[in-house]
Image 1 (cartoon, helix red, strand yellow):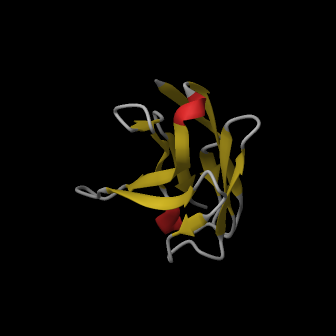
Image 2: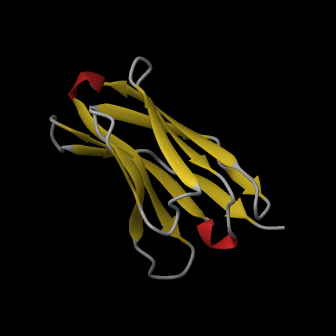
Image 3: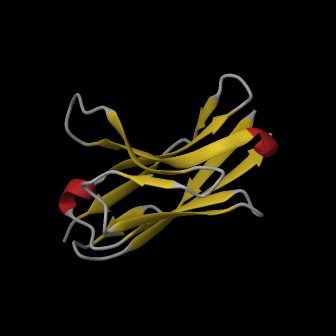
Length: 119
């Protein structure tokens, strides 16, 4: 099992910055990719991928945040980060840390951290 714990969420003004962290523990040697999903606030909104980074360091970032958000990974400390710059109100969501693993059930989730962008 992999246990993921997020930190760094909170209230930020539009145009501001926030950095999310996610520390993994447990069977970290089985982790492949790590990343961040978010669930927006509107009823019925599904969880969407924001950014992911593979064990080789390749990154995937969705178009709506590209150029504003970046993802990085500290392999030595089993931590993944999401740097959020120039945030917008539509970035308000619960952000979930995620990882894929060779250990069943093959993916694990953190409990989520709220990010609110508001003046």
